[in-house]
Amino acid sequence: MAQQHPTSRNYAQAAARAHGPSLRAWLGPWPRRMPVPAAPLQAADRQDVSALFRPVLGLGLTVILSLLALPNAHAQLIGTTAGTGTQDATAKTKPSSKFPLSGEVRMSPSMAAGTLTTNDYARRPGLDLILGYRVGLALPADFTLSVSQLITKNLVTNADSGAARPYDTVMGDIAVGMNWSLRHDDAQGKHVPVELPGGFRLGAGLSLTLPTSRSSRYQNKYTALSPSLSLSRPRLFSGHLSLAYSVGVVKNFNRTTNAGIESSDGTALARPTGPELLGTQVLTSSVNTSFAIRNLVSASASFDDHWSLSVMYLLLNNFKYYDAPCDQYTSIHATCGRGRSDTQVGIVSLGYDFDGHTSLSLNALTASPPFSADNKSYRFPLFDFRSTTDNYSSVSAEVQFAF
Image (cartoon, rainbow, N blue to C red):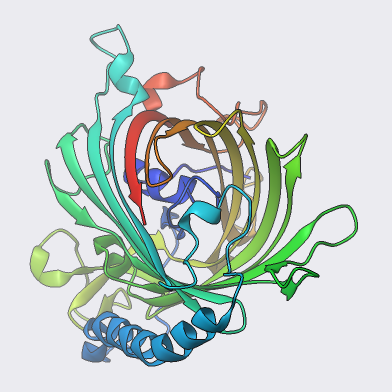
């Protein structure tokens, strides 16, 4: 099976922080190129103008629901005598009993590993400035609603930096998440997580993507839904180590099976009556991802009240809309069936917490195919030492403020 890498290093920055307790960000599948004919999901003459307004309407509905739920959530939390926080590493950003809102803002300059190459002919510099935010609201029945987004400013560009335009500012998709953890009231009246045999904890989540990014519009994406289940084991070794595992499915909802370019751009050719022409768009050979399966394993160690070290490994199995059957013209070297691409993401993060609100971290991020180009050797997931100039890896410094 041929492996393909993400089209953008900016996507890797967003994807790699997904689900991690201290690696906060957002995940969504990315289109991979596959030379197959276009296959519209709907009639070729349909022009879905309403798709442009769905992100705005979805965000407005989320805000309205949050405001409606705020009085009840606030009243219930005020009535809880012991509060809702727990004595673990995530308690500092949990909503308090008097203020059900939590959130964080962060800034992270990120440098591609190819920038450090000493060979002038092979060097491929890349530098981005990433801004992010997340807002959470505590709801009744142990639910938490969150809204998050990334904004990337390209500072130094090269041929494969992923920036559509040099020095571009890219708005990411808005992720709306609903998380739930199993909790109960203990003997002291504290509302604490339920611990299974062995000290394990269960959790569940559901995220909705609002397609505000340029890449989602290129994919003709309506939205994406992602349910997930998590199993964690906190407070190992006298509370210094926490382990977590999460499995989830991402289902994309696209208007077409292939990504589309506006015919007025003049960047794609189409026959006047060809199936690749869909209204004002020309469908490309880039097949959209129908669904993806993701598995994530993370470990976080705290040395004292300030220093911590986190390691995360994420494996994404992306499956396309298009199913390519074998026929008499198929090469013996081709793999038939549904299009698929695999991506692994690894992060190592060393963090320092100043006062429970302000923190600084140094991160090494790698997003690459699990195997080499010939599929004969496995790539080290935490840093790409064998092909540094491919910019699979990047290093960054992140400043974060949480309330």
